[in-house]
Image 1 (cartoon, rainbow, N blue to C red):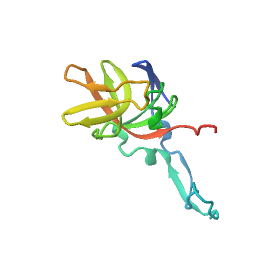
Image 2: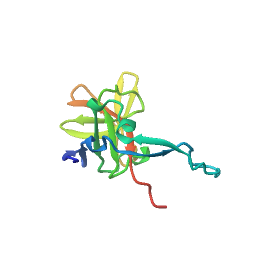
Image 3: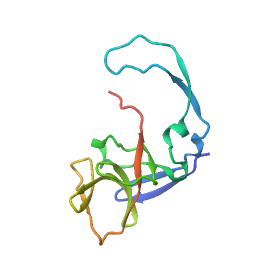
Image 4: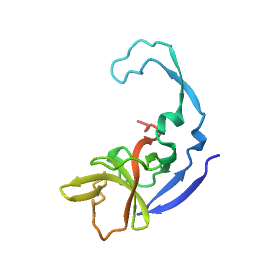
Length: 154
């Protein structure tokens, strides 16, 4: 059973989700790729089954999921309602989306290092970058390793 917890963040909300419900869910995996360019002949060849928990989660003891609420990361393909798979064991590196606990609230932004300075960068021009300073109460909780969302209706 999925447990959920609502956590307020800077004018956004993240919903922390348990990934226990993914354990043991196996779906058919076809050996052929689907073409996103020119169509190719279908193989109808089933490669086997894929365990979603094992595929999405490399470090189960340090991985968690959160649901996004807000629009500060839309240009990074992170949208309101998306589910983020976050690995706390990974070190944040330049250009990676991270979930941070900043001044008592959660936020998701892109980590940027410029010289000796670090920034949390939004991916929406309506939001301002956050320069990380020693005065801030901030912890990088983890690195976003997957973004799960439904396709957008065209």
